[in-house]
Length: 272
Length: 128
Image (cartoon, rainbow over the protein chains, first blue to last red):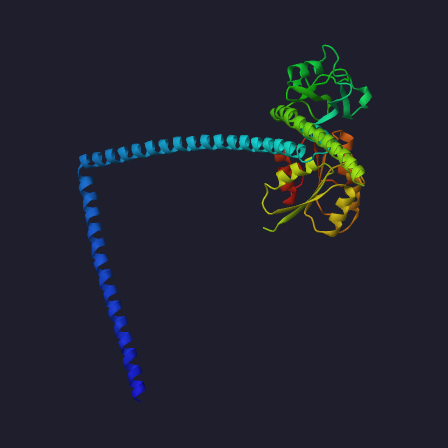
């Protein structure tokens, strides 16, 4: 019984609170209503006054025109800003493409130099040179000449597109290969000219410590390759530097291996 | 997005490294390398791949043979294939495409172009 009374009291309290909140809300509504009525009355009065005096109308019109002008100026300024942003956007897009291209070029150069120095085996280095010239440069007929220690001549060590014996000698007087070796710089001819096995389109001298140790002569390009890009010239330069040292190091290594084996043979002979 | 698996079948380590460099710029890809057609066939048969980049001139088994074997196998038939080769003649292109290659790119490659083609095929877009 006592529990029922308590429950009734608490419910009564809840109702009272609900009613008092309702009363407060109603009061707030009345105040808001009053404020809006006052505002409306003021606006009506203003409108009535303005309709009564043409000067007030002129004043309003001037204010509106001035506001309109401000808005038009703002609009023009926003339009100009938009144009600037679009121009900046185009510049960023162009720059992005440049960076992408640069990135691709660097990847090519990195891979070329990485592969050239990935081995100390002479045949492997020559294989890498061939891969680079075919896959990265896009050559169809070419030869890699190496210095023959005995004859002192540059002979074809490896070739693609024709037999080694079909390639011309590097020492042909007045030839582009002799010029390139003399200048110690790659020489690049016109890639659109019909190819032949007399004069190469590209000569890349392989020079170490001012001494020629070889030469890469490109005589014909793949049919889909119609010219040289900036990357190709970079690759010629990388090949000139890195292929030379890679070949030089591989030759030194093989010589030292041979000497080591000979010495080991002597030691074995003496000690057994 | 689930990871995509790409198989590179190419005998030149230089080209493989270059292609790996290019493809690694895509997020969420796993790249597997094969050094000739036979190695490629073994790998493509024993694992799931979303795309294969295949060279034509390779020792042991060439790329064209590999493409025809892949297209002849029911479970592998849907793998998009991009040929990357030095062979630029029209008849070589037509032959590879008739065997079932989806795209035919010639060397020297542009990494951006390869990426665009690969991304398109992984999204299921038809080659342009």
